[in-house]
Structure formats: C-alpha cells, structure tokens
Length: 419
Image (cartoon, rainbow, N blue to C red; front, side, top):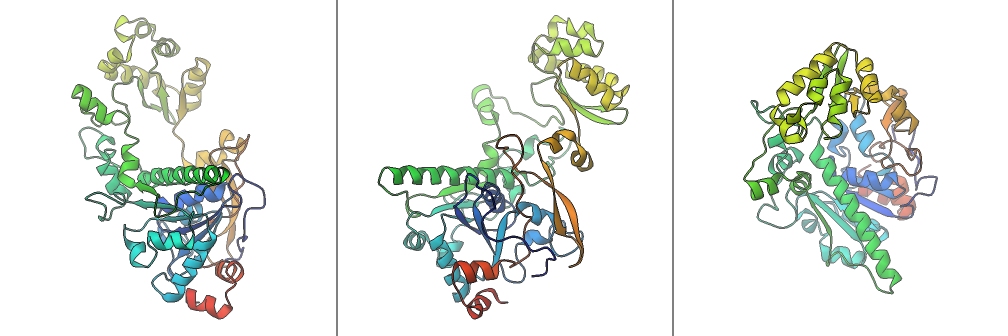
C-alpha cells in the first residue's frame, strides 16, 4: 500500500439510502465506474475489481504527476480496490465467492466476455439467485452490432449527438468530457436501483426477485445518447425537418447564446415569450421589445443574428458582473461561463458543499495535499453528502476484501492478486 493516507475500509460511517447494499464492479474506464460511484456515494459498499499490477487504465488518463490520476480518484471515490486476474483459477474463484455475497454486479466488457470467463448468467444465478446484474456496452447485449467494441466517442456519433455539436460550417465537435459514458452510467445506476426496488417488492409479497437468467439491466452507450436527443427523430418523422449544428445557439430558440463581456463571457437565455420584452428593455432596446415580429420564438429565430448583435453590443460594453447585475434585477436567466478556478471559490457551489477538499497523494509517497473534488449529486436535504474517500490505490483493499470478507489466508490472497 503506497498511499501515505490509506483509505477507510467497509461501509461509510453514516447511514445513507443504499447502506447495506454490496456491489461488485467488473469494469474500467468511465461508464461502469460512474454507475458504481453513484451507488457508493449513497452508501453502497462497492468492491472494484482491477487487473493485477496495472489496474483500471483510467489511472493513467490525464496523469500529470504520481501514479494515479485525479480522474480515477474522482470516478472511483468511496470504493474499495481489489486486484484479481479473472483469467486465473484463483482470481475467478475469488470473484465467484464475492458474487455470492453481493447484491449487485456491474460490468462493461464486450458482450460474451464474462461468459467466456465462466461467469455466464446461469452461473451467476446459481451463485446468487437474486443478483442484480447491470451490463454496459457500446451497442447493447443484443442486435447485429452487439459484439462490436466502441467508446463513448463512437456512441455519441452513432446516437446523433455529434451531428449537432459545433458550428455549421465546420466538422462536428465534441463536448470536452466523455458525456456518453457518463449518461450511460447514470442510466445503469437508475436501472440498478429500480431492480433493487423490484426485488424488495417481490420479497415483501413473499416471492423472489428476478434472477440473472430472467432479467438484467442492459445499457447501450449509443442508446443512452439517443435518449437525450429530444425531438431529433420526431422532427424528421413528422415535419421532414433535419436539425443542424448551430454553435452556441439552440435550433428554433432565440435569443439564447454566449455573449462577450469586457472581462469574460456570459450565457443568457432570454427566449421565453413573456421574458423577451423584459430582457430587451433591460438592455435599452425598447424597439425590439415592442416589435410585433418578435413576439414568439419563430420570429425571433428568423432574426437571431440581429438579436445576437444587439445583445453582444450591450454586453461587450460591460464587465461580467455589471451585465449580470442588470440581468438579475430584470429577472433574465443568465450566468458566467465558469472555469475550474471560478467553481472552486464560487459561493453557490461552496454553500451546498459541491466542492469538497480531501487529502490525496499527488506525487510521491510523502506528497499528500488537500485537493478539491466535486460533491455528491443529488443533494439530500440542504448540502451534499460528504465524500467518504477518494479513489483508492491499486489493490489497497486486497487484504480486507479477500482476507476479512472472504476469510482467505494470506497465501491465498497473494495467489489471487499476484502480490
């Protein structure tokens, strides 16, 4: 264990909605870890299985110092890390014993991988008849593309998102984060909680919940993206209208865009019919407020360039704070485009504990520093649930998970983990 500040083991110290639920994560990268992070945030004991010696590849993504990236520390907070080689006899035996003790299994391998390793649905059902199984993959567990690999970037393109991101006269862009993975993780977490609820309802009725051979949560990355595309397909189906890239605007809605100020940029959404006149009067354009051709979004969209020019001229002559003060007084939805540095000191984020500082090993065993991390969403009450601990070092909980939970000897633990 190399971390100078070892992470706690066992469940979080306070009772949370998912306390008492144990989850086994057989996944890496972003989608599955996002799902299990949400479960861990609200009290589930999440055991993350990683490859011996190398671990989740996310440990090296955007790694600027040390051995473990802040991306890994963020997405795998509140979890336990155990090393297992699932291709080995000892590693597979450990996984099976853990599955027998868990409520949930989450995996994001290519469909069929677990079957080849001896963890097919029938085996899972024999080990744990009411196990909730969530599978995340590029194209789902069925269909002609089910066996095709794919990351979020491919899913974002296939699901329709990339076609709408960027400027119309340039190639499609991306949003700067792995949004496809994150959305898929959210759906997986929702599906898991839904099936846990179904299991409890069945038990209350004197029955049993569905087994892994009867039902699993099947999340496809491209479908998760497609579900976010609003009326993209209905607009084509009903009207023959194909949406196109519009940069910072939203098709058919105006004015709503980013606008330059003297010291930064702001986003203003003044597109509601009853809001638009108030917005225009606030910026000194009574002529636009009273224009009968601008009473609805259709008219305003047709004249979007004129409106954006007028608004941009007004914002450019003011600082962000000056512009936002006027807009706030007028009840016009607006806000600054925040940087990470802005967020870390923002009173709204801080008031709800949405920025939490935890000790983290950054560069070397003796280099433990306070590092700011995002809080837990959604808020229960008035403030974020406290983050229990950041993503652990590789294999940090080998002894606890295999030795204490399963009762294995140190020799057996060493065999399964390669330590």
